Length: 169
Image (cartoon, rainbow, N blue to C red; front, top):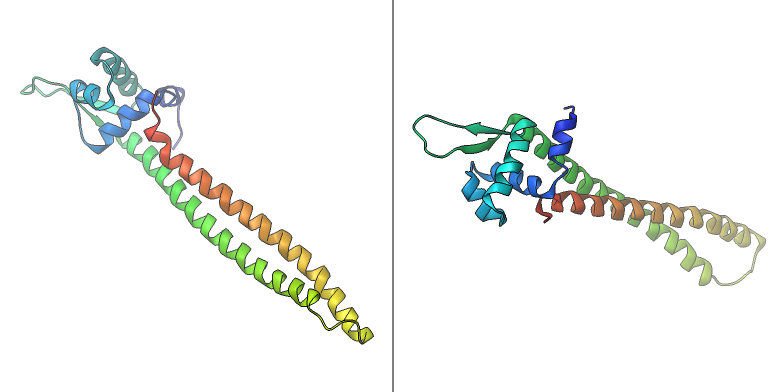
């Protein structure tokens, strides 16, 4: 889905994001939204007009109703579902990265512990074996730190995305 300038402008306000978030839960009137987000009716009305003009909300003005009800459009639902997919991917990738990092970390730790607790230098062959293990362990530690860093970054990204609609202005 391509986002046009009006949509980006509409989503640039934390208040409009809160209004959109509330309207995604259930259709609402201006009065209901003003109570739920603790803003004046005129402020909410202005933000609703921007959201309608951007195509994120639609007005439902039936003849039998006294009040105008706002509901999200398919465009708004697609944007929110895309955000949820990003959060799920972020959490999944952080889990996989953590498991890879841990899997690489423990063999490297075992190699280093063997190096420290070895019986000493008895034979030239034993020295060569230990030297190759030491060289092998450092890249594993580095790789485990890289995967762990990726995991932490992805988890933080997912948490930030999850909290975005709840930001207050």
